[in-house]
Image (cartoon, rainbow, N blue to C red; front, side):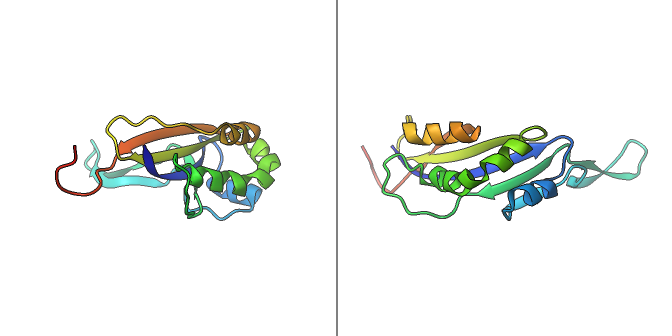
Length: 148
């Protein structure tokens, strides 16, 4: 079963700034990066001069608020983001013209093959906001010793 999870709202654009997202949503992001920002290490180009790759898109990220959950599926982090975003629906609609918006969720399971259930009310809330969901589950070994 999924024993832990972390969600982040990610808003990306090939043409518009991350700073504009902050202005439209009125929320402070966890992290941002702008189009053209340097990425990676300085490398020597074919002309012998130092060069650096540049970011090809802007990104604005809001991590879920820290929440304690008794939910078996541990989608509390997604619930927290949805609660934060519901009053921002009109602003999200405005951004959608120039930005790709998704919630990325990483779940951690105590089993190698971990299925999970996304509650219908959570799916409906994400759908009402027009937010795509990208989920991944990773095995997280718990305890020590021989577990059979």
